[in-house]
Image 1 (tube, rainbow over the protein chains, first blue to last red):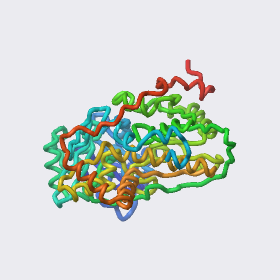
Image 2: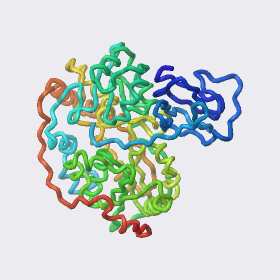
Image 3: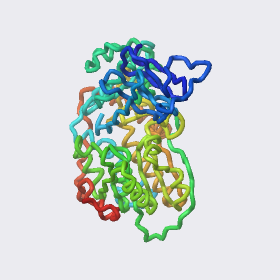
Image 4: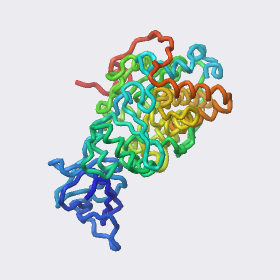
Length: 96
Length: 378
């Protein structure tokens, strides 16, 4: 999958942009994410229902995956069943 | 502004100094399509004949470039490789994707998404006796907001700069000369906004303030649990100045904007290129001082009215407004200025007289105990 690809949650409103990825299955709310929204919504898994926050970047422990939330939702993000965590934001330096 | 409000100290300041003192003091040179100073912003031509402004001043932003260009193999540290990637795409798509990614980007041909100045919420009126010395909380960072706070301080108000433990104002470290000029005389309070007790103490301080200045993205405030509109509706006479890159509502509220690219989004670079054939940045982070001055003017007027209000100030739209006003005022003069700037690449910035410091610059957190006595740190 190319960086810059937009993925939609099958279980909630979440949309992400792929910053970095490998070959694993990217999921939201416990269900696989895809470029198109499925006709029928997937159930939201209780284990992956902490919600996503607009503008936050989510990463895995190995640094292989990074997703940017561009639309928030009720599900939370995972890859092959392992939850992703928020990457800390950095303040802007003084000058440009 | 000083004359309108009969504040002698403000009358003594002139706009050209406020706009140019960072570049003059810093020894900046006019650099055409590269921003003056550190050169963190670049204007680059796109496939469809547009110009795309991209600011890369954080490593964390460079990591987003493969997603911006859809190219996992891009050399993200190489300016030539980045310019080549820009030249393979259309401007509007780069701006749209860049903004979704949270990058400070702009097109030389865009129209600002928001009005320059908009009242976002109103609240109850407060009658202030003429002897009342207003309390200003400056929660902003970098240049625009702190300059507004500085102008309030020049007007005789009590100004408290509030910094967050996790996101202090980095201009203190990166450009101490400018930091000292625009933050002198302000008290300094340091709070940990992730701590509920400290946040509650800050909200209590806000409730007794006359003016709040902030330059956070609206969703960052919401994530922190600070509801500016609710505070304005509740606290009589509270003037809340929200400085944004491109607007405080809708999609534009999520876009990042800083001084140089907001000037581009406001049409200044295109106006200069139309006159000279040379595309480049106009001024030094020009949207910052323009917005700081505008915010102080609007804030003073709101304070005098006594009506609580939250005023949104969009840096890109204020740049466009300034250009339109100058054209209306004296078309030949502004065109001559833009022509001179556009044909002066390589020249040093115009010298403006260095302003001597008039007051102490307080250390970070030096006044926390005074303003937030309920927080006693061990």
